[in-house]
Image (tube, rainbow, N blue to C red; front, side, top):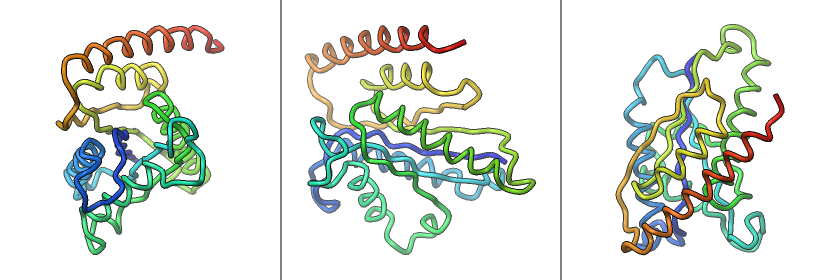
Length: 199
């Protein structure tokens, strides 16, 4: 079987699906939807999952006093498509809103995907044979290097990782300089983690 996972990384909050706040996360959701629709009629894809993992706040990702970004993004996807869209009958959603930040979101996504793949192993043939896993994730150009580092160092090498680039407001040159610093920090941290892996 060929399984697809479509992940939207959070950027900002979407308090109201009809509102103008949360343009970054909204753009990433729309990019995920477009890619999902691209493969909707592909008979070679046997399983399709949306993956959303962003928590509630940076200070308390798994708190219960406010809506998680993952839930807000899911609500926006449903709102954008419309509740009667045929895509909703074919898609499954993996959601675990208890982490914050790019590395946390990617790590949690990998955990959820592995758990889902393990469930296939318990099924009878031919559903217990997963031939390929493709993960699509949406992000903007500025964040792409940092997100790529996370998938490169944390995901199993057999998985196919594909980018869905989208454009949304980001900020001036100072934000790009800050992002470059974050990218270097991530690279050092992930490289150190990779060396500490057993075997």
